[in-house]
Image (cartoon, rainbow, N blue to C red; front, top):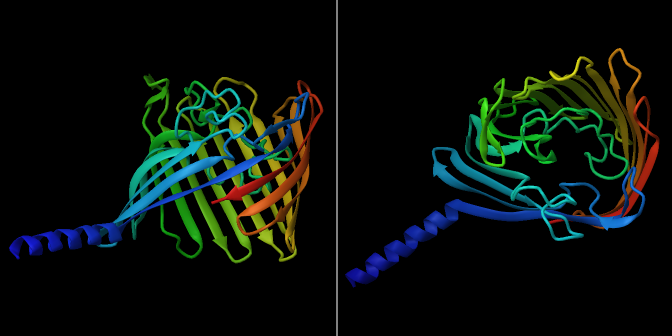
Length: 328
C-alpha cells in the first residue's frame, strides 16, 4: 500500500510538471517557380533564403509569474534538402538558437538571433525581404556580424536580447554583444566595438512607428525611422535609413515606400526602394508589384515581379516568381 501511494505521488508530480511545460513545433514551407533578379534561368526554389524553417519553441512555468523559454529555428532549402542557401554553407539552426526567462519585466534571451534593430527594420517591405519584388535595400552593404564566414551574419548575432513589456502601445528592444565572438567557424574573434542594437516601437490602432540604431563589432553604424498607417482599404508605409561604414569614406542613405491593399482573399502589394551613396552617383533602386491569394489562414499562393535599376555600377535587372507558402 505504501509503495502504491509513493508511486501515485510520483505520477501526480510528473503530471504537474508536464502541465507546466510546453513544447511547440511550427514553421513554414515555401517553394515555387522562381526567376531571381539577375539570374539567367527559371528554377524550382524558395522565394528567398530563410523562408523555409522548422521551429522548436517552448516554455516552462517557473512560478511567481516567471517562465523559462527557448527557441531553435532550423532553416532549409526545399529544392535540394540542404541547409538554407543554395550553396548549403549555412550553420545548423541558423534561424535562431536562444534560451531565456520572461515575466512581468519583459523577456531576456541569450544566444543567437535577429538583433533588436534587424528584426523590425523591414516592416514596411510588403514582401519582408522575400520574393523577387522585395524592397530589401535599407541595409545595403551593412552586416550585423561582419566577422561571420558567410552571409548568415547579415542580420543575426550572438548576444543578450531584451524586450520590454508593451506600455501604451510602446515596446523597447535592446541587443548587446561583447567584443569577443565565436562566429567565425568557432574560432574566437575580437571586434573593435561591443555590439549595440536598439529599437523603440509604437503599435496601436492604425498606426505603426519605430526608430532605432545599431553599431556592429567592426564599428559600422546604421540608423532608421519608419512608420505606417492603415486606412482600412490599404496600409501605406515608409522607412528611411542611413549607414556609416568604417571601411568606406562614402555613406549610404536608403528608403522604401510601400502599399498593401487587402481585397477579400486577394492582397495587392506595391513598393519602391532606393539606396544611394552620399556625394556619389552610384545608387540602387528597386520597384516591385505582386499579389497574394489566401487559400486559407495558413496557405497562400503568391506571385510578384521586381526590377533593379540604378546608376554607377548597377545594371537594370528583372525577376519574377509564382509559388505556394504554407505555415504550420
